[in-house]
Image 1 (cartoon, rainbow over the protein chains, first blue to last red):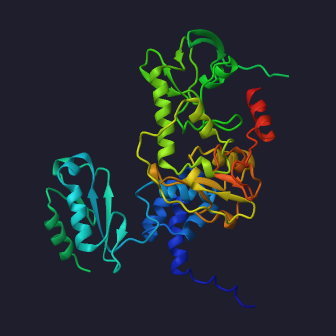
Image 2 (cartoon, rainbow over the protein chains, first blue to last red; image 1 turned 135 degrees about the vertical axis):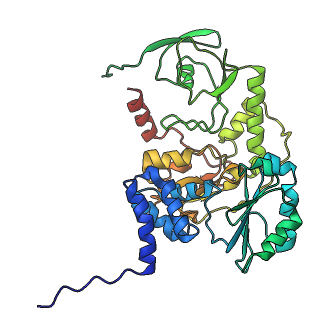
Image 3 (cartoon, helix red, strand yellow; image 1 turned 90 degrees about the vertical axis):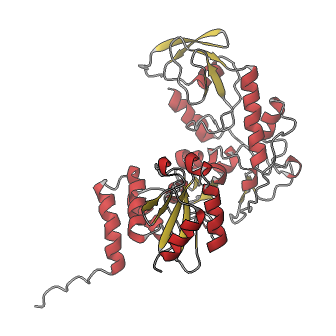
Length: 165
Length: 241
């Protein structure tokens, strides 16, 4: 008698989804853990696509519209893929007074993208935050998880151009 | 048979009138029981209160705060004022904001004459809008075979969301985004006709206070709605007992 067939190895996609499932299981597939599940999706895939939202809704037994509503309510969640580099411009009061608006204008002029947009070559995404908690460094930006303070529009453009593609 | 309630009986003052109530009642419920009118828009008997429209704001004397009557529970010795110059001005501003942020053109609306927003504006004396109109651009969704969603006339009261979730149990509707970008969506922001969870029961259309959700084939001022759905009345009775 032949041994039972080995289960097919997991595809990369299945492995990735397992990472999300681990988080959902930790919270007992409770609907209250929707935000944690969406965080897990974004961490694993870089953004939240429709397919993932459907799968999360089924797994947590939640209505589709609720999942979509929560995913769009929080600025942190992205429904479109981000670029390889991200530049978060702080729009908090201190940074705003110190010229965050001028930074946004400069970025728009230089790279042709506004808040929440990504360059066509997927190089850079520009986002805004209400406050990154570094008011003493105003105006501050967060370039690829690194906070840069006391920084002018021209310096920022220079920093971004120095990033490898 | 009314089961015994464990809620404490309290006394409070609404508009200088002493009224008795249970402590598990909201100010709005107590006011209505005692014939005191408080304007509401998002509130609908039989649905959970949302506190979204801020039209039922009342003054709680001594706290210096205004709170929505539909979600605020009564307390012993509370002194409530339901009308004052400040409250009236406040309510008019709320209505003006609703008019300014949508495209509410009564003259061409199927709900003209049967619209709660229109009625409130008439009652509260909003005869012109002092705020600049935003004139947003919203596409009308007529993909459903029987109904139409016109976001231009939506006031985001979330009655449709609640009736779909709490009564029909489908939860096809929800609100996406936040602030000025908030919108009513079906399933994953799909055309209504493609939303698989919709049962086409039409309750959302009946409870919608404006012409945002309407039946197809209605001409101007022809859309009359039945806000008092039997399911809502039954549920309300169960809730009260």
